Amino acid sequence: MKKSPLAPDSFPELPIIKGVQFATGQTGIKYIDREDIMLAKLSPETTISGVFTSSTMRSASVLDCQSKIGLGTEQGAAILVNAGNANAFTGSDGQASVNRICEALSLKLGLPSSAIFTSSTGVIGEILPDHKITNCIDDLKNTLHDGSIENAAKAIMTTDTFSKGSSATLDIDGKRVSISGIAKGSGMIAPDMATMLVYIFTDAKIGQINLQKLLIKLNNRTFNCITVDSDTSTSDSLICAATGASGVDVSKSSRFSKSLEKVMLDLAQQVVRDGEGATKFITVNVAGAASNKDAHKVAMAIANSPLVKTAIAGEDPNWGRVVMAVGKSGAVANRDHLSIWFGSHLVAERGQVAKNYKEASTAKYMKQSALSIHVDLGIGSSFSTVWTCDLTNDYVKINADYRS
Image (tube, rainbow, N blue to C red; front, side):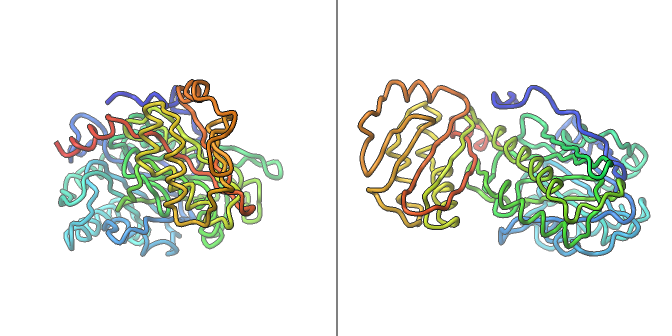
């Protein structure tokens, strides 16, 4: 598959997180001659927190993970991810597959099943041939290595055109704390929790309750502020593991919180940059709203509008479609207070086209690969920022042929 024109030049160098080892392998569930399974083994006493899709059609893996968050990890923990089959909408067979995978890993790794977290991504509605996964466990166990996170990022890809990674390091009281994260996601992206599949590892020391609260808060400012196509996945999972190996307690550290948010936002934006068929990365800023909730409503209405997104794909400064999106959002708005900018170009103000609006210069701006839309509702002081991409012919081609 052709690499997204919005992709970074290369996969970043991520710091090794002490207490985490990775291994990858080939199951052949869907893909031929490529790694499609990832195992992360975590040291004893690792703290595990997570947020998951709010879809009422949650996959078996998501339901299983949700039931295990907050349980003991005194002996360690493990995360196993397969690509190519979502194990979603598979009835009781789905949970049976998860149980067999967890039991096999439990036996081989010497961990309780309650400390094993699985994720599956790919086609919905197909029974997971879990024997193809359990047949790989010995090889995965024997090849665990602390420097294999880049391979892990590649193994969890489906329609992604590039592997996604991000990191941060900071010094606290003279000691180094590191964070490394990977993600996959390209389509079916309108998170109502996190995003497709995201795994973040840190050597910081923090309690499970504190990490869970922090993850939820930061998630609402990062992964819950992106959209590719307005569709919320059945499998969305964000898991964060803190091994505590640095010995640095970050429970009350604002610097750690900011660093974790930086990693999460970077991964979230990489997912948008890899939106299926995307050619434009779009920042939508909404200010002057009556409430933060209304600001987010308007921003997501703009970001999810097929008419806005196709206009941007065609490099057409059709600001009337933004007006439409504001009007349908359900937020409090007043036509005569509304102003809209494309980049630095004021296109509409006080209920009509801006007096100095110039179509030619705005159309030239629309040719850039990174664009911004700014809306001021003019009725309050609340604001929101979300990120999205354009909607192109390639999105239709990718999804029309997804199961072929």
